[in-house]
Image (cartoon, rainbow, N blue to C red; front, top):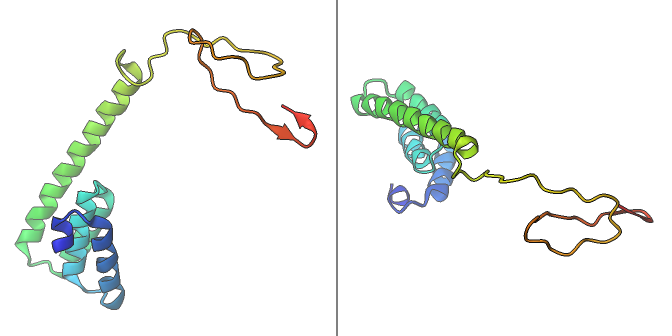
Length: 132
């Protein structure tokens, strides 16, 4: 499908869904939807689509081979995601590298001036006539 080659996955999925709506046995629609889902890195949905296509056409050895590759891709993506999450919090160069605790302000009447040594985020909230 040209849309998948052009990485227009959302549009390709819409067309595949429309084809499936009109023909529940549209093997090519399930196959192409799987390709789009892989392009979007949605491996769970890609597996579902490819399984359905294989159930509809079990003699297709190409889809069975593709299914094995898909399971390996899914496993690699899962492993990479676990590694990223682990390093996000434990790696000193990760995104959460709090050097020191922020100093809390109490009973503010106004938002304090910015202090580069202690950056914080403030929200002004009013409930009824009360200022919080």
